[in-house]
Image (cartoon, rainbow, N blue to C red; front, side):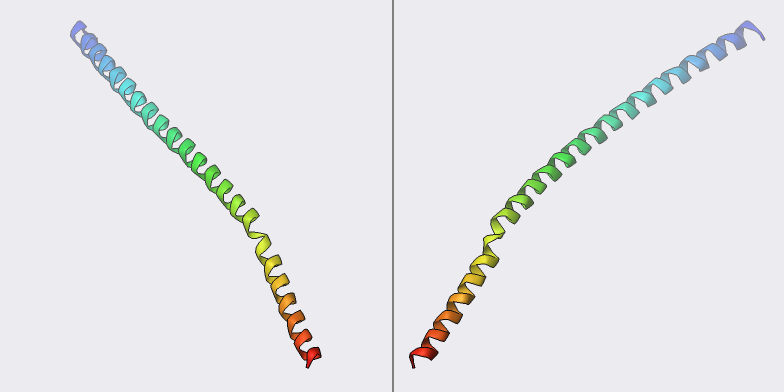
Length: 84
């Protein structure tokens, strides 16, 4: 191998090393962005879960109120039938 060929090989290797570094830097940036988006999605999911739980807790009295209203209506109907 001549000196000129050795120099050319060294230059090519240096260029490849630079391209590889650039590629890894871009990959790191993409991974950081993906991680940031994943963290944001997890935070959004946690917030939605909290909202759903709050809605579920606030919803429980509705069936009870409906049952009490039905029983009151039944009681009034029976009272009216007995009063006649």
